[in-house]
Image (cartoon, rainbow, N blue to C red; front, side):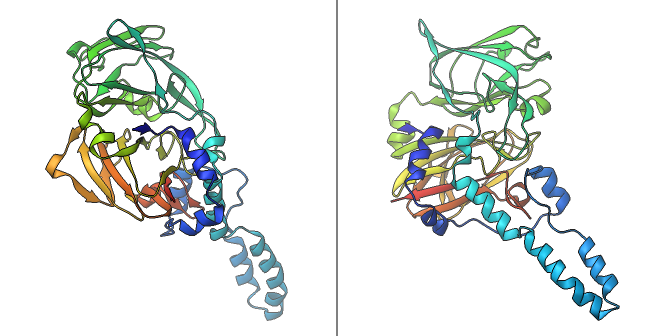
Length: 380
């Protein structure tokens, strides 16, 4: 099974004419959000003109006592209004940025597979914890963040059930930290909670986690010290443990050709998918009839109901554990903080299909879509 590299989406997307993509898109355009919520969630979009305020209506009301004065003001008012971008103009512009591949133009895309070095029978991952400057999309100012090996999310670590793992974390922050392998069965003294199971990793120090990878499935690694701040600013990553039995792998079991990790967060970087806000989120590009797997991971503090337009998702695992006969089909799947859900999608319907959090203030406002939005683009 091919594991989805974000670089792979570019050539596939570029072969599909824009008009075809736009015709196939089913992006929602529901409901407006109060201005204070929208500005808090989306931030300031550089180069975008604010929507008209209250000054024009007040001026027109003052002139209403004189019909002549009102008529004299109307051309100027109409010209000013026509110069302002409309809600449709702004919504179209942000979608165009997405379809033009903004995710490729913004540097620092995380969640890239890290190959371990081999020491005897042990897979070794050398990790740094450092301050970084991170871009959420092309129109927002870069933010001060934290990263594993320089990215948010950190590298994707992938092993096989039963592998011996050594993960060495060097702390280059000016504060202590501790790393928790969420969902894994580690020795108690390496569970990553400072003063509970281990000493904190102080600035300039390193800590080595050594364990046997189990159970298999979709798991995570993240800070567990000042975690609201540290995880909220980027100290999070995916830890995938493939099953020992190849027949249980998603490529064999479901015929999946893409295996996509999708990490959500909702703290100091706003509403993000893999550390990015729309329109700099990476699209998922697939061929018609292709089976793909998405591993949803919630590293935030809010529940996010992920909704796919155009076709359903088959939900096959929760927190790394197969659901078996309890598997179910849905088009909206709520993922709580700390949870991981694996879904299989039969990409049967052509077009560009919206894929977004259905808590609407996390995805859409008066300037168009932002935050937790991407698309599944199905090509022939």
